[in-house]
Length: 600
Image (cartoon, rainbow, N blue to C red; front, side, top):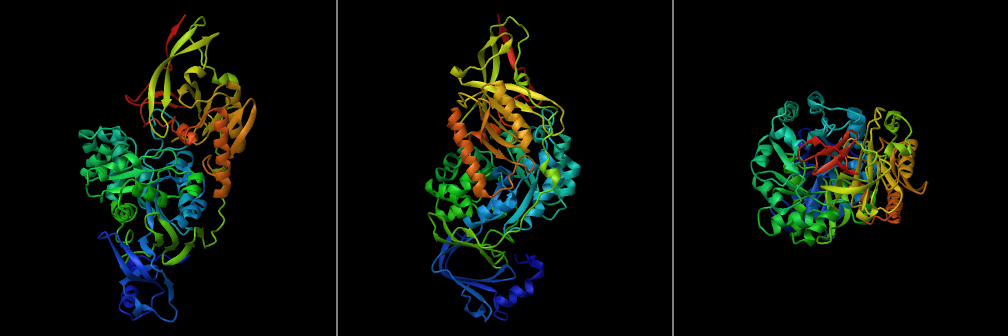
């Protein structure tokens, strides 16, 4: 890969090429420029490039010398490289290298990743590992420093704790462009000292605060949240939420990932209200390998916006200039303009977003859907591959839920009800049968067991509960991808299979597994922090497909069920969640009893 020059170091060279005193290194000829600055499509445009940056946009004939690489665009559209303003690379279950190999040929040239998944397991050391890997790939990898590790320290235990001191240190790192999604919006609104110290450290470093305001409130609470400098939010699921945020000067990041598909609804904030879209961006948040292979990344999300009635140029602005301006980086990124980095896509069909060639830093890095560069091998150290620390092997008896009264015949319990392709759960109160002092599942009501076991420091803490909506008829599934503390999460219809599933993941170093009748029927090892594979995207996608088949075999036909399951412990989302410490009412932010009452 070519060196990435700061603008301050190459102003003389850029001027010399633009004026024809020196030849360009690369010239793109005969393109149709998608001008995201003005919203125009300009025919017969050239782009002259030197030192990885754009020297001239227009007629570049005078910049061509003997050594200039000339690329005939043959009428292709020229757009800026696509930028994802909110992404968790770990959710792809791949390393940064494999992630880049998947998304760059699709047109993604810049990501703003919030590595709070690996931070919850390995702390600052995990973040540094991903940053270093990001320097070795033809993808601009910027970091929004995780702000809430753990997400809810009063309710759960993670593998690390990051506070104001760590945030202040990270703000000095070149790759860190801001603060990761501030999920603790109550802490912001009600003046938590530590939370505001993190905000202060970010603002003093003149960097961007990214948000996570997940409640449907558009009045004083949202105003208070934005007043602290929070710049953007990806948690809108209603059009009115996205519109309210844009009206208050907050960037509404419209999400289309593997498990949640918000664009269909949230894009109405623009298409139905006919408002300026400059404060709207398109983001992926969490995307699985099978989605990346079959549908794509930002190219797919831009297509979705176009399908919902957005003008193609407007949709492209939402993954280019709008993102760059959100992070105050439009001097370097987001448009095909003089002085900007030459991250440029050649697109043959603007409506279908068919990416033919990808340039990053002025270098042709991908064409016809494949990477042209050989990426270096990446080896993660032992401490990153040895993250499973259970207090003891799991036993079926560990998953038993007992009543206080041994004579009870039924118990009213709190149940988390999931909603397909939605991040929230509903808090239900359901009556379950009791046999010999043990609360039973009820498949007729679609209610099965769930448990979260601490796996970072072998404390032995374990939360138990019940969940509705997965439609499992047999077996058990387990995962160490369990947002955000990533403890060991097990869901199942019987205690024996639940114990086997959990123990299998402890054996392989973490991952995802499905078990039926004492047999493992699908397994995806994720040995790097229990979150990421060391295999290729194709191999990971194959194992994900096998897991999806196993879910169906067990009775579940939801979209991305493992992703929906992985949110069960995330105690910043409504309405009821389970952590390793117990059941949490996330509306009132308090622990609640699993069993409400017992009947004899």
